[in-house]
Image (cartoon, rainbow, N blue to C red; front, side, top):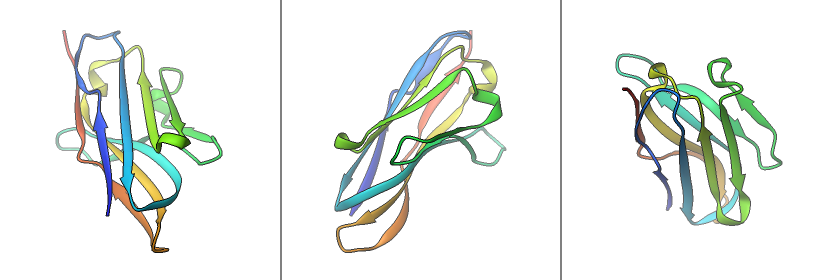
Length: 120
């Protein structure tokens, strides 16, 4: 079994910052790409940022220059530093991971989501 557990969401004023964390645990052999997605009410779930095992990153245009994704491979953890937050960043943020389990299975896993609300 593999679990992804997010933390760090909350309520913040426009212009503020939040840091999300997502820790993967369980029968993990190797994690490839880890990423953050978000879903606002009535909208589809979209990619925010992703990072490969080697550290290559990819960002949605709407967050470039404001958000930074990073990971600690030793801890199987991915982070999302969010600065200069805007009301339109309000959404449920989901952690995602492509990984190989100890039994050789390759799978894609999701966390339970954490709410980020940007409002004055």
